[in-house]
Length: 184
Length: 218
Figure 1 (cartoon, rainbow over the protein chains, first blue to last red):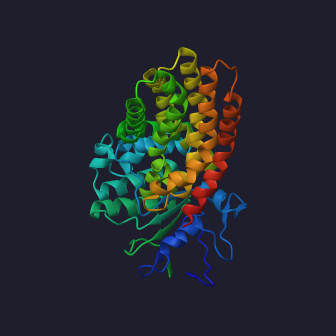
Figure 2: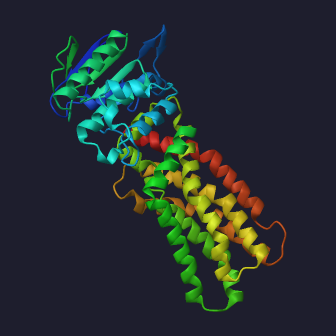
Figure 3: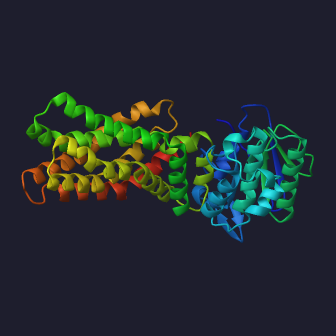
């Protein structure tokens, strides 16, 4: 059993920083919220436009996911990857602005196999923008990023929450922004 | 769903490996069997349906273990699972893409290889039709195995053990269709193959989605 009597609430426009040592269950908590895992007991719910969504799979429809792995295909260019997720999520085309925001404009036609780990992380951040979901679940979003990349990532999180979104961020690094903290 | 099918077809075309490997395997088996059996054209024609059906099925299985595994390993499956597309529809799209990149090319290649077995024209037609109708069942049932083994290291070795017994009706009805055409019988096993393939394509996405869901939670 990873968690007992764990209870928290995150309001719209807020960032929750989930912190703790390796193996305490930060990733598992994100996967529980996403609905990939079911809690042994208790409930996880998302309230959106006055509707309470408890079902894990249904809740997933409101979630933007940035996991350990970057979901970057070696054979597809950065632009193709973002176009695919925009089509899959039915979120229209905001590809160019997402590329600019993540600092990927120069790399847009480069296949994934030529990207560094940090550049792949930027693609994941751009994907979050393209998918346009209100709740961002982010697992170590600053890992592999250089100083400029970290600044972009934190800026995107701040902008998302300023627009009424929520970000739940599992991290070992301080985000350096005003956020609530959950230490496991 | 179309976006997912197009992406998988595009990836298969660019990576090339699995689909080309399947075609090469199919061609190699179909070429070697007549060399091993000898020049008895009557015998070759009698066994052609069974041999080509088994070869096509095994060739299609070569690419099946990566159906979900590649997306699982690079994190794409998590992102796809959270899209506003049910896992059942996702599974259906994956099955369709696999058939388009493997089953369909194998079907198109089969008449050429059937010539090596001395099959008459009506039997070649029956082989083509039976593969066209039956290979979607191979992709559909194979997807269940791919879903079950996606988080298992070297799951590709276990996959055939799970899938092959379930595919035996397709081989029996497919080879039976060719044999019936060779004997000048009408209909043969084609209606049974059609029913089997239809049932597999309808039911498989649900079983596959359940298997994938299980692995996403692991």
